[in-house]
Image (cartoon, rainbow, N blue to C red; front, side, top):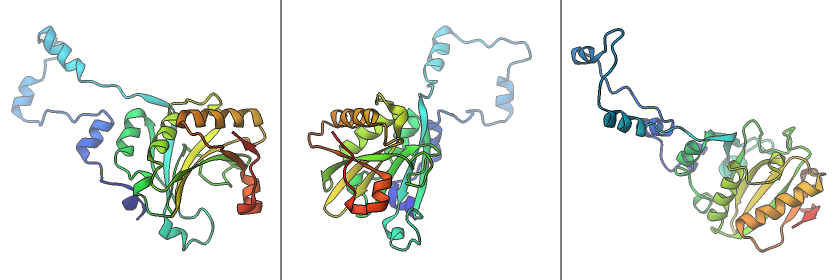
Length: 237
């Protein structure tokens, strides 16, 4: 299964409780608990230090501006697919900082993924496909890395996405890392390819965030569909 190939380990019930900041009721029932129940109208006692200590362990989650979904394209399934994109599967949707780290820390980084794998992180309800209505008129910036050397840049890209670090963040659809035999690629997908100013701003900011010194190109999805590998860069940064 795709999930089994992506996930390092399953999240336990205790870890899930910690991720969602929900704690099981420590009372297990029984006569002793009934004795501890306050009478109607009774004000619970306890010293100030005790109450402050209890309050200190209640952590609030940190919501993100958008929800995001991780998607995995299984390389073994791709060879059997009837149509492009049919092997892509959603893995997990997250909407808080805590949920992001809980899933990120339990998935393989690009250097550990099988050759041929594609791992995506897209805004919730946007599918990482050319045919998606939000992606259809867009394109992508692409960075290239030596085989197994994209882990840090992939993490920085994810943090830039969920942290809304782009000036034209509304243009962002998501990102994908492609693991291949000789190299890794990270692509940043955007919505409106005709908005040259926004695309150039995104490309330049992305390079700065990654400290990436090579020239990167922006290819329009429509050109990629028609020309495949013959598609040329519309913009460069």
